[in-house]
Image (cartoon, rainbow, N blue to C red; front, side, top):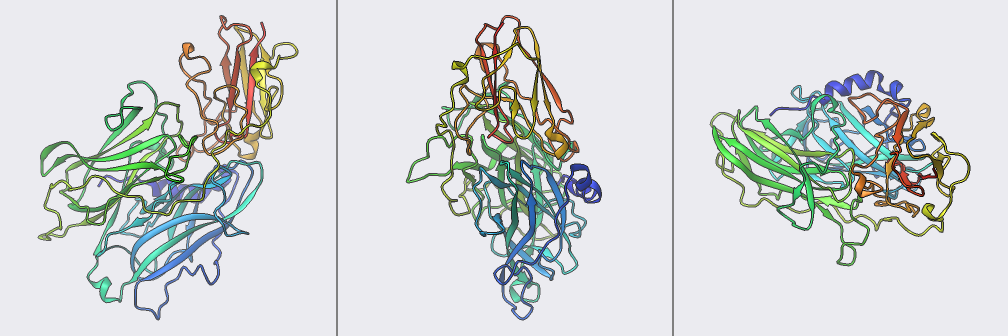
Length: 513
């Protein structure tokens, strides 16, 4: 299987990324009696291990990608990992914090010692999918392994938070009879981006080439596809997808098998399922993090030969623009020995291409958008002479920040946004949102818009103003961005915008001449 060489990036990051990004990974600290990560050597049976990493102090507004070695927080023993389930908890309360305040944006676990594998063997995002390897299969680890954790904890607030990243591990010691008959699996990592930004493989879906969704004709979607060549004879036994808000699904397809074309036959669709509350999908949930992903059922199998091709296609709803999207599928494949007979005959399509979500429903979220009592900037006159610069400082836009009068601008001018927060390793965006854009922030408010005036076409979005390695962040490595105000813009036109990294931040401009 063609693999993303994330570990190369990870090791570079371990040597210097903390200094580059202005922060350092905290060492792992044992968690206590209820979080024992080491298997009991006197217990020969399958065990459930409870691991945590931290404490991690997450500064105001932080959304940096960090790396760190995982030592005592992994089972330092010979055996098989059969499941992984990750989350993040507040260091004081032990509770999962509100996702719209601070959350584990992603966690990716790597094991460089595993047969030289540079492929992540487990990953999680906001959906908190549980990776449950089917019965009879397991990921083999040894006492000498040292895992590496690539994580991004996103703090959307202006206060610091101290947290632990946690993960529960199903572990079967190698000495057990069950382990002796267990089939080993390799991790298979498939993303639709790859390339030089493999540690943070993101892209921006567009409306160019968008089409009506063949699965749901009520929405229009953007598709991105990538093919992969299989490097070994594999029986693929499990798969699950990962998307960001706005993502609809990841499709795993067969392009060829046993040297014959498969016409992109669907193998599995990992669907983003919006969580329901009291039997209904709550209003305001679109574009939020309140969703889960389906994974393959326990009896799902697909067998391929070396040289066969499979593909992943990711679909995003483009009702709103969604930036820094991901389309990733993580799978487990059992490498077939010569003469070994797999459960599923070569090239036989799975009987089911749908699955179920794996984890429990999270606590009811706050979708945002509540009235704040702040005035609609369209109804507030701008005061003073037109400006050509807006500063971004201490999580505010000045002039024209939230609760202030709109900053006055002239048609035909260029407004330069400049951030001073980049010096504190805090990135910001200037992204268009529908007026008044003054509601309380939450999981799905504000949402970016395709433009303040649909007749003017594309939206405005700066990308992340600030600094970060191109291979491990979406930072533009710029601190300024220019917004041209068209010369024919009518007086009174109001631009409303927000920071999509820290949606508590809002601003507005008003054309006065």
